[in-house]
Image (cartoon, rainbow, N blue to C red; front, top):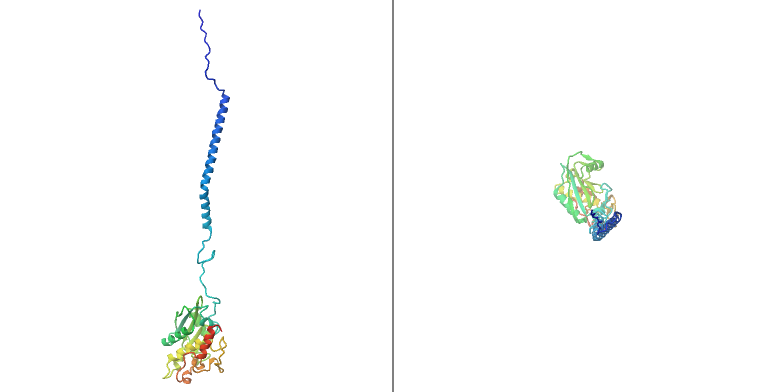
Length: 309
């Protein structure tokens, strides 16, 4: 009997032990992970370097936005301010007569003069008289922004005789303009009737910025040769002179031209500041008519007040 022996088959490739293969796999995995981690960090580093200038620019832009913007016409961190006149500019329009003489005559702190004329309907001002009055104002006051008339009101008659308080109350109720900003105000009030403290008065200066014309009394003073408008324009300029500080009101003149018997009035009958100009007897005393202009002494005082005296 023949027996065939089977020989074991020889393996040409040696098999790797399982444990060793695991170690290899772990090494490869760690290497791959490490490589990926390195690449990732390197990529971030490159990206960060590329982004750095942009980030700086954005931060600079934000800082620039937060900085207050400078304007050539304003100071940094300051609101825009409206130019204001030189101090003092706050005045009392109901102060003592003559206390606003510098404010009326000088260019500062008020560069503009506004004139308001209120009147009782039955006693309106004469156009020519007011025209002469405004011309006198423009001649003497130094107002770069001009002299304007504004805010006139027509009123109802209230009495036949007015006290100081009556007249002040009418002004406080009806007056439209007051001194403020760059504007100084002058208020003229025409009323019917007369002044209870002096029934013969044609006009009276009541405060620093106000005087009153008693038109009915002016009409009573006329003659066949002297018209009401002539007397009226004289009285307007006379009371204006008081507001200017003439004669020796809030200002001591170096010229001896005050009437000792009529304080704060000129002793020169040729001056509009002559005492009788505001009295009902004016046409009888000055038969040729009242003067309507300031004389040389008055004008010299005005010039000194304008210069700061």
